Image (cartoon, rainbow, N blue to C red; front, side):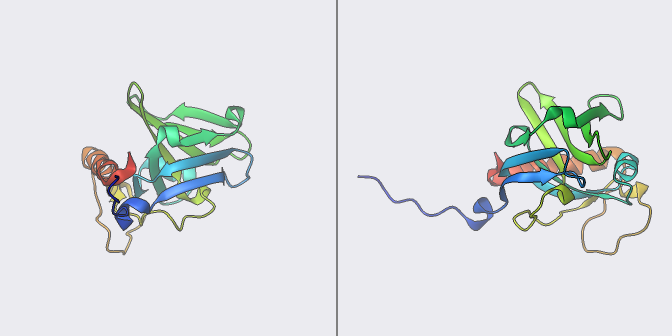
Length: 170
């Protein structure tokens, strides 16, 4: 006889994204996601400011294997700093950010998706922090933590992702 299990905690059921209609603004570079969001944050680094043509980027992290690009020839990947660094993909048509990948170890890869590229962001977690805040263009007035400095920002994202993994994002 099997013992009935309690339903998962709400935090573990939430933030699962199943979407096959994600894309850049021009919709030429398309991708799908089938997985749990690990973390969401606002990035104020100079690379994001340049690529997004905005003061900061709203980014959501997923396991790399939960993201599938429809046509890889529609996305151009590039590293904008020395490794280990995020391989950022931009649309070959409009030049907008599509998504980025960071390989942490063999078979361990994260995907960083511009939240604006998800057609329905209602299932996502709320943003948790601002990183690279020392690079901000203007002050942001919200209750979120503001993390300044390269290593502190990297550590803040690492903690967010690890917490996402611990709450069932794996």
